[in-house]
Image (cartoon, rainbow, N blue to C red; front, side, top):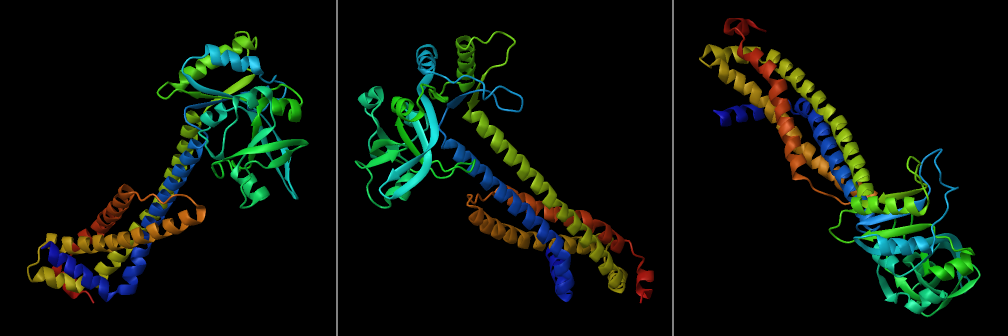
Length: 401
């Protein structure tokens, strides 16, 4: 019974191939748009998650001042070495603490020069940022304590200043300070905020403070929590300690801010997921339009085939058989449109993800959902024309010209 209905539906579609294709077009566009949008959105979310993971795991960033208009930022006093020592001795559940001071400076080697971010820090910076030295070495304890002018450069600085040559052991000038290159960092690429993470030069904190910045200020402290420790508790303990050290009384706003990379990742990926859902919902509207197109064409088809329906009813066809014939025809139309839409959507998503440099994440769930929804559109919007055909009076239908 069903096989015969599908055969008749395919014959009807072939008889009016162009009209059938135009009828399916709404479904094709709707399914293709939903799959493409969701796939691109999922790839973007994954890229954001991966980029934020490059910042480090279980990581807290502490900065002087608060973000936002009208809030203390420029006037907030910087941190100092005593703050770092207090955090090391009084904070529980901490794996590494890295003081950071930085500014943009010109780095010169031979006839080449480049303005890069120069960061004064110590070896715990590599732990907090999950960063590896792929060539050379990290700072020696004596270099950190004495403030020796030794530097570790990022991949962008290496490429721009040294090309393919090995920079380890060479001397560069950072601002006006001669500095020996002792290591090269592994590449991390561009961050999710659009900055080049490899365009940096690391030198011992004391060397930076004495010879480049000219002060003992620390502009940030990065704190990496022990794996398995709740970073929210570490953050609360850190904020309580810093309020006490900075003399902030109860009821007064903090003059520093602590950001948890896990919370930042949840916020940013949550935003992209919401946008993906909204784009998918907007794209699905075209499925509704496609369904209306199917209903319209099926009504036309019933009118054109009134005599055919009358003959079938007159020779003994049951109403449910006529109903199923036209309902199956509508479902076949929408189903074929769904299949073409799936192929179109995946193709567009593959091209777009390559152009946007985001991962292509095939989601079988959204493909099944889109196809099921397209078939459901055929059932819903094909039922009324099919019911109209099944309830035709055979005598009146045979008289129809």
